[in-house]
Image (cartoon, rainbow, N blue to C red; front, side):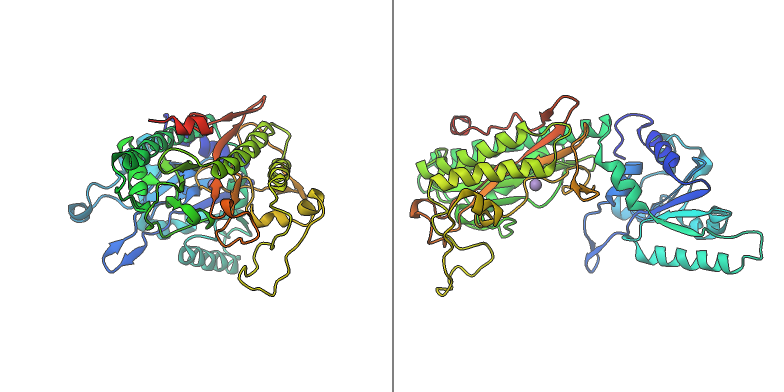
Length: 462
Ligand SMILES: [Mn+2]
């Protein structure tokens, strides 16, 4: 179980119970294990909502919570025969202790369907997550319909079904002090991984000119550093993209030979207690930036600094994206990137396409021509999910930052090697710098501050 302090999840369940409508029940199933192939399963990761409420990473658990703050957990009880194969199972005693429940509140999952009528008895509303466990949800809806059909009986079922994610996802936006601690710890492990991998790459090239380093070697180094620090899971698959591969935003292959004069974009983060970290650094393979690489790098860094300065309560995602875009466009304009260009999402090699020749910086911004070089958004929420849940817009306007929000700030400039309309020395350069920000009462805290970002800092690691 992922609990950080005693009563953490009990308190959370009580808070959520208070938000439920009167005479209601919340039922949440943890997903089953998924088969990878034949007898092999994928490594299990519970749904984020289930972890959010219970801290449990166990399959086939069921959580019931009523508006009267009655908590019931249904779970698979340990089975000696199964344990022979996969090891000790989570015990009901442990769940009782960690969630501070009575013995009678933790029952075997096979009893759930026998008890369902009692659980639903005289409840007016039920909260369900229809996105997960379709089979169980369908079965439950059939039971609710049956209960309501026989309404001449004393017992009738809930009349109203509410989507549980509306309730949970809004409360997941503002992180509690315990959640902040967990994310900070994940980020510190990731930070150590970045320091280790930066030292590793340049030491490889310093060993001998003939040294061969592949993208997957870099991936292995940072992931093993996460492991060495005690984080055994990743928040998402690590991206290691060298040279022009950095211009594929979610590059997946990870098998290219890295050349000493190339940049390496590393986008990686461990998961700890179910919480994600999400960091990107772009570093010169052998330790020293070339002049064109440095020019573009400093534009991305400058954009990120302005964006982070604006991460204060009351500001919005839209605002920080706007100032990021403005900074990038003004600086790329100076370097001649908008004299003529093709817009994003067109076939670069189609010779019939006419190059666009914008007349002003304003036109580049208004018509979004900058997307040729910067085609993603500046930020996303971070939490149990790496792209965490929560609304970005409220009543049609960009949501205001509040203390306790955690999100990324990750500007980038991507200059594909086939951008024949860009000065040649810049082609093939792809750079992203990503940090994780906590909004505080008076401003913000850059949680990944200690991972080098400045050119001189990166060049002087050793
Ligand atoms: Mn990200």
